[in-house]
Image 1: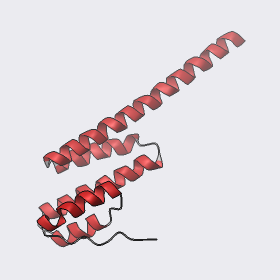
Image 2: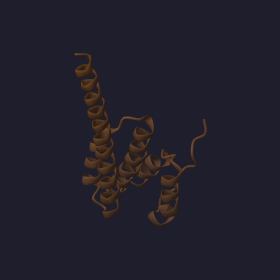
Image 3: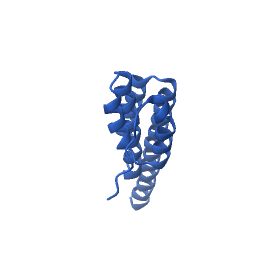
Length: 120
């Protein structure tokens, strides 16, 4: 009986590990898809992929990456609507260094003024 119980615990632990790996893989796949679609200019598909990543995010760092990418997409959507002011405000909220660099690098060509990062 105890041997069976130990075996069951081992199987359960392996399955839980596999589930965590599957969740991580699903998160990674969704984030890659979101970035690829954003690069292609497919904002609706990028947003949908990001929603998928949000479902699989388990750690705060993952949720923060999603938040930062969401700001990039939301700003691009505002810009596409012709609302440069809203795009600038939204993009100014991004504080991840790699996203800010990308936004600032293209801001002049896009005709938007990005506010400096907020300091706490």
